[in-house]
Length: 514
Image 1 (cartoon, helix red, strand yellow):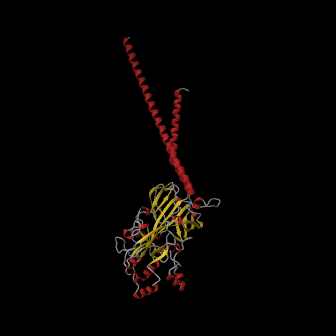
Image 2 (cartoon, one colour):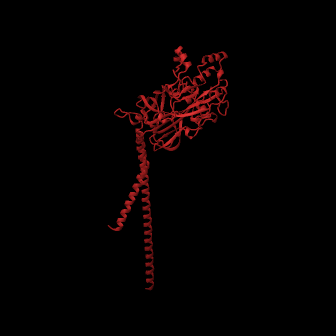
Image 3 (cartoon, one colour):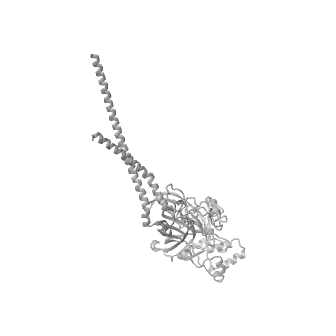
């Protein structure tokens, strides 16, 4: 074989390799991610395998593979006498965290509508974790907080005649106080006995039973080792975009009854229960978990690249609450200043929860440290709101798996002066009781399983670039060889042309001599 033939063969081989590299590189970018997405999508649904065992998604859903913690900080009022008798604003002492380890487990799981719907109850158990609490934090610590029951009595007394008010004051004398001293355990899960309720229920138990009056009063009394109701969600079997979409709660389909909130939109049952999301969130579209969350940034959690979602800053603005029907038209006016609180609604940044709670206590929900709320709500002794008070969901976009969560909130009590003599010198107030950080981080085993499609996607991406760049490199070499060959051929042709021209001149001269 001649040298020219070898060079031609090598050139053809280089062309073939370059074309193949480019084709496979482009396919790696386009085809492989789609195949991965399709495989993930087909496997992402709540269901059972052919042998009757739970599939991997249902296993994760039944027993969430997360390190879940509930951290609580208390606000203890330090100047009770000044608040009651001099109309001063409370000075609070913030203490915590009191940390609880949380175990979640789905019970009463059943399927319906050809396995496209799932019914379940979500049971939660809380265990105090002294090692992860602050050094001097104990559930036996005493705190001074507003008396929720006393505020209900204030509500009853407002607008009553002088005689009725005096009867109420006589009834509660030495039994009810504006502020109470309780242990942290009593404030949270254990609850505390109220003397007035105890006396009434012991004498007329039928009234307490009819009104569903609890034996003890606590912010989370009766919620340890229990569930929050029966849910109906989509399994995602036929459409992964509907995975974990909530259709009903405690038999209420589509929307809550008129006992909840103050408008139709607020009563709608929307979104997911915040445990599962659809796959393929590459565009970072907004998600819904009874309220809308939006992509804020790209972050790294547990060495996994995630999309960080959170509530919009204007989530609890007056205009949004009013439009959606969360505003109580009979909301108490705590500030008598329209720049702080508009009439017929809680102040911006706060959500009145009374319709959702037994007995409708004037509990107001907010972000921790009144983030995105008027500065007038801040009390002396509170930490100022900061970037650390934002809540977020970290979601891996390929699988839609929640990698980490930080949900921060605060429970506050609206306190009115009312018409009783004991509170006549008080001012109307919103007083924080506790703030909460509910956090969850995925466990190591699940993280490793989650890394498989992520790594395949990454390696495919790298290989795609390598093959594409190699194909481009081969194309450049082929191009340079072709250019060089063209120049060489042009040079040869030019030389031949010149030689032909010289021969023509020679023959012409020769003919002239002859």
